[in-house]
Image (cartoon, rainbow, N blue to C red; front, top):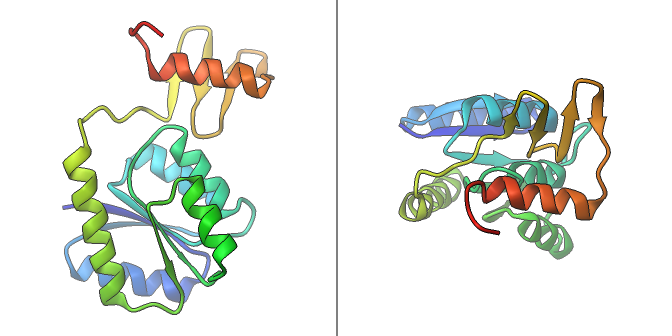
Length: 174
């Protein structure tokens, strides 16, 4: 049974997604904000994410960036934003598909099945953890930050890029 993280602040849409996905045998984890979505994704490691872009607090684009910091699971954007610029921004951030609201449940389910099939065919079982904890520091790939006992260690974008490259290639010659 595949686990789907559904992220939408519209409770009516969230309930409809939960009911339809569960009726078709999916395990569903709901979230109403971007921050909650990143926490749940880290804790439960879903097989796919259905994500609205217009969320309170953290935007859907920021959620995509946060997820792509540590995972390659399929992300399907489901949004009322139907402009080309929004679609391009989401896909360039790392979304796998984009469905505009209003939407047909049949099409959404077909796109989800296709994304899960593609994910299964390329998965090598090497999903990374969202956080790497050592005795001296913690690297949070989804939040793109490093913490030690005294708090956050400020890194430049170049420094973060080096840290991320080293973490993703642990044990390999880089």
